[in-house]
Image 1 (cartoon, one colour):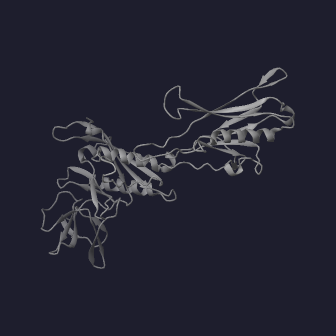
Image 2 (cartoon, one colour; image 1 turned 45 degrees about the horizontal axis):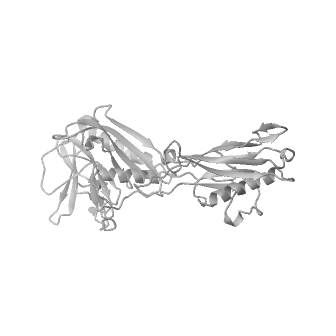
Image 3 (tube, rainbow, N blue to C red; image 1 turned 90 degrees about the horizontal axis):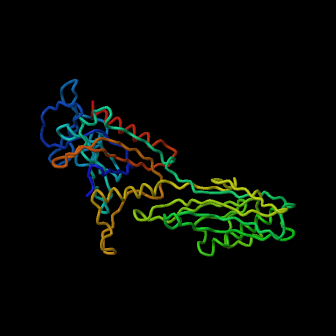
Length: 400
């Protein structure tokens, strides 16, 4: 059994926070002592007739005539043209609430629903006395850029001049891939590139032949799904593998993102090393006939980083399983497929709130938890800053 205090929560936020808290009532309520309470009054048709806010300065209720407010049933009301209109929140909208007794704070989040009826998900109840402790609530913001993965790469340059190329010598290197198929210490996979120099070979011809040798060796089984091979700035493929139409002064190797399946197969990064054979010249072995620059490639090659969308999708899958979706895919193919919110091809900024959690009833332990908010981003606007600011403003207002 897992300790419920350690199960964290994730919310995919597509809408900024709406205001503080509201309670939908059809009858008058007692005058509150907390100036953050807002009251929505309904008419006989269950439509919002007015929104009132209590002000401690005037110790009275005042009718609001501007703004958008979140009702306790999850819908929003907006004042416009002298009337209140009710709207259903879109998927991913997040609101901040307090319990009627003012003792607890929680977040309400709109999840996915195939029938287009909003499904509301509530976070844990966080005691305000815990939040008010100056060291019990901490924020951490991480941009999508910081969570990108850069694929491993290497640039191989033949440093021998034409005069140094020795006919009859074997020029070769190995691409060593540890732990490619499993994590065992002895799991080492190797791809080779070898060429035997002949009279008339020079730096350019040796470079071209080595690139062709590596590509052919790779293509026999893996079809470029481990790494790509470039001669100069041109990727070697089946259509140009004879290399009669391309040329280059160096060989670049760039790892390829590996297959991924949400929650089942994480996207892994391929790591590799390169070693090469010495050549014999004048009775001595020389290793300096080639050089390798790791984490580098020809300047004309664009290596696109891998966004964090798949990482966030895996996190959502795991946390949703811990919160009640444990039986997903049971009875496949006869099962109800859960529709998740994270798009693995998108980029997400991440905002985490770390806090002390206190259980209830028999589970009255105190532990550490995280609320994680992931916000789709195009990296051109500061969406993360906007959400963080709205969160901070709402929480501080509740605490004031």
